[in-house]
Image (cartoon, rainbow, N blue to C red; front, top):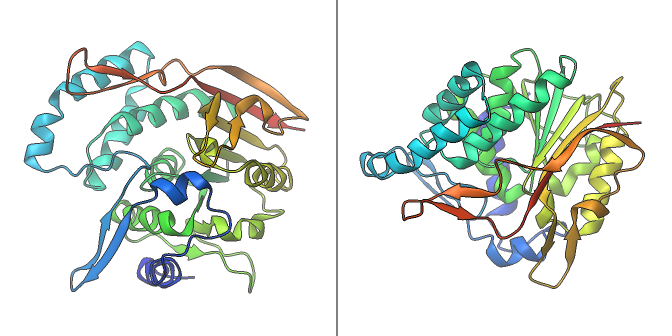
Length: 299
């Protein structure tokens, strides 16, 4: 068992003492991964970049956010987001000291869609979370479940720090190769060490808008790990670009992920992931490409 502070210290020493990217870091993150972490007497100061909107709840930001807030309210109503999911999503954003933006709303809608379709999960893994929001929201909606967070080590530090803001007293662990499987409410796993999740009893895996930024061999390895789960039934929710070209020319296609054998419970263009609200007219900006979302049960 670890503390949040010890996990943060370990990740900082491993990934911020040197600027060298890890072997599983794609050309996308080698190009745009400009997030920074500094340390002072008050602790870690985080400056995220390119993995979601983590704007703070300062008075100025809240005033500017009013226009976006109105559009998010309409979007949540349009897709019948349950009131308890919305309330939980807003609570997690508030305790994280971040605005409830599109990145939050889309996860509320996704979880409202998928959670009623899977048996009560005992262990849920979030691959590529942004600011720990998805994991914290799933922990709120599933208070008896273990949450496993998998991310690149540099970004994982943000997941840990923001989770601490919402669950400061929770038991946590950073997965290591030594010793038995940790018993903790939150288990953090560096993507650089993803193979350590082989044969874990994980019921549900979730990935939203980050597989599209991975190299194909890394995507294939995640599917291999998911299929190795010892849970009675294994579910995977994936929402990613239909096609995306990475800076080095690598093309990733949703349809080319190693889906089979699996059974799709739904498979469609994600209706709420076509445009996001902005401050300037016409107040919605389309994404660079279509986003497909699919829930499968592995066989």
